[in-house]
Length: 478
Image 1 (tube, rainbow, N blue to C red):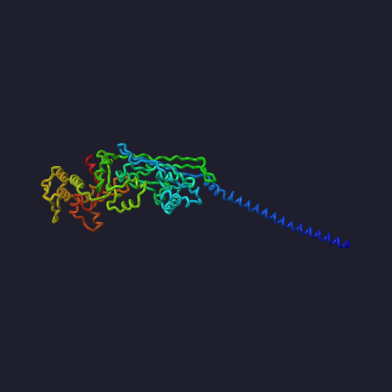
Image 2: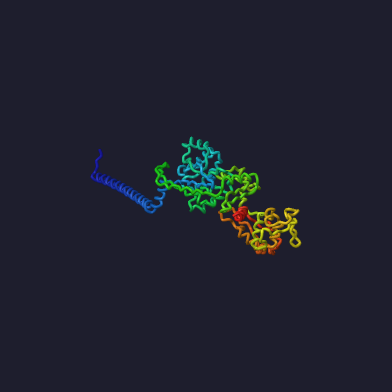
């Protein structure tokens, strides 16, 4: 057995003590860094908390509200248009509309759109483009398709569990029960364009809205449109809808009663439907429009239900221009203008009695120029009444030859020519009444009396609309 000296025990105790001290220092150092890391982490968390709760408070409060409440538009029914004899010629009907909620399909939009394209029989690319364009301006849900068929609704409903975010709603849609008969008078509504939306969004329009594009629908858009409503609904973290928080009911558009007589409108269309032209009928008592038809025409319902590519191409390329409202376009009036020549002659004192007469040999001579009557053999002696009844060109050549062009133009304007009627149709033309100053400015030429003679029977530079001439004759009848 080995003997240990006192020094050996001292050294052993010293080494053990040193080992304990070093171990204590090691753990003390580790504890220090552990405390440091804990304190540092708490500081970081506190700073993050301060950033989120104080600095970004407003931002995240807004985001929280956006995520917890969803808003949907409630479409306002458009006002009806009713004729003076009580026939509804523009109304609304219930249809199925297809919506897609982007919040419920954030990572599955293309997948859902692809499935819908197969159900609807549409090209995926076109449907996708339409969806993303509408999504930019939609409040909540995005309208995918209007006026679903019963078959399409059935296909969607049986697959609804595989189509999250897809919703079929029943809404009102414009309906024109008499089709082509009223196209140019009523006009039509169509989906708002991007440019129109930019100009009208402050007035409560959305990209899904339809807007009056022509005729009465456009002229009285503000009255007929109404005001859309909004419904706000709670939504949980899973996108499930909860209770209604707020609901602003839509305000329907106002109904509009027009002066048109339905029976007369139908009759006018039947007379013209296989021809190209226009008919305007006015009340001699107050000048109100009783009928206005232009042919060829278009069914305004197609602007809502949609045209096929072939239909749209045929309409746009047609030489008969079915979009054109001929009742509001300007043309040389021909013999219908002769009554204004007669009125100007009466006012100027050129004739002062219905018995003033002119001899018609079948032509009229002004200097070296010969102006032919439509009746080559002539009408013989013609007074005012016979001049109107026979539409004798020579009688009106004679009157016009004694009139100054500026005076004839002035009387024409007094009768309402050369300006729109002020009834609100954007497609209405002013027409044109020439005078001496206009020709000098335009052609750098003087006005010749022979040009006044030609204008006396409604020819030359003169242009008027059928509606303007109807108002002239209405005033005479009154």
